[in-house]
Image 1 (cartoon, rainbow, N blue to C red):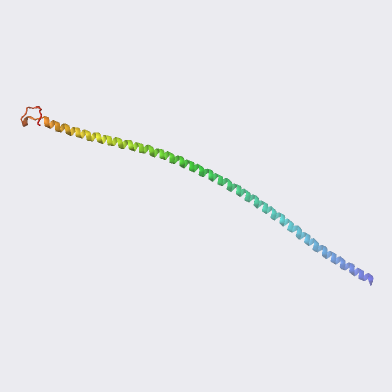
Image 2 (spheres, helix red, strand yellow):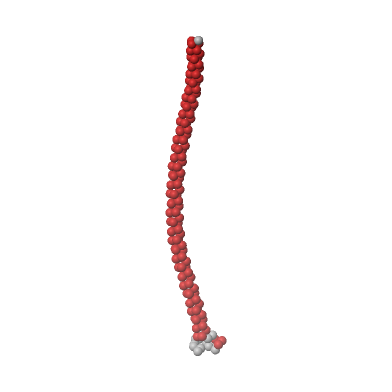
Length: 143
């Protein structure tokens, strides 16, 4: 009876050990799977961090390009304003000169008209045609 009992206990122990071994193998397999998944996720995170860093670098480069372009546009606009201001001053000077010349010309014309009118008046007063009782071409003071 003891031998049967010992044999039965041995059989139960072997089954228990076999069952326990299978469970340990399953858990080790699960742990290995989780470790593999962890390594894969860690690589994905590292890849995402590198991608994010690259995107930051690209964005910073674009920002600096934009700032440089903006500075260039501002500088060009300033130069254009300065050139335009100089051009406007030049045009104003020309316009002032033309206006002054036009005024001088107008004054000369008015003076010439007055002189012409004075000469006509003077001619009429000193010249007496023959039908007014004088000889042809006779001049004299009518006053």
